[in-house]
Image (tube, rainbow, N blue to C red; front, side):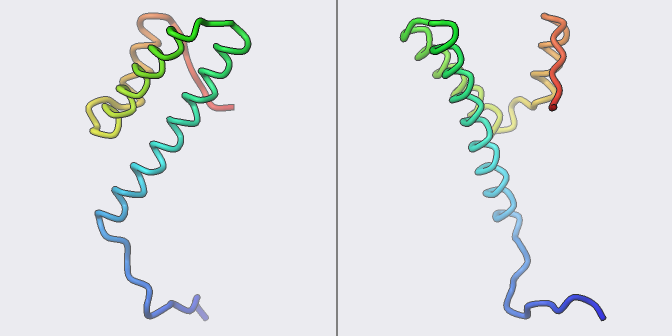
Length: 90
């Protein structure tokens, strides 16, 4: 017999899906920003003004990503072409 369905549960709307996607993207990107700035500050001793500038630039990129003006594939392509840098998840 199949799984019992909850009759009160409503399917996710397009707005629900969009909100969840944006929330997840924001969380992931902000975590990466925190980790990146932490490494620069503590391991590479980058000056405070440079850290703040990087934070602002990263925040602008997150906004562009959320507006879908840029994709992760766009960023990967630039990194590959300009720096021969290939990123992968481990």
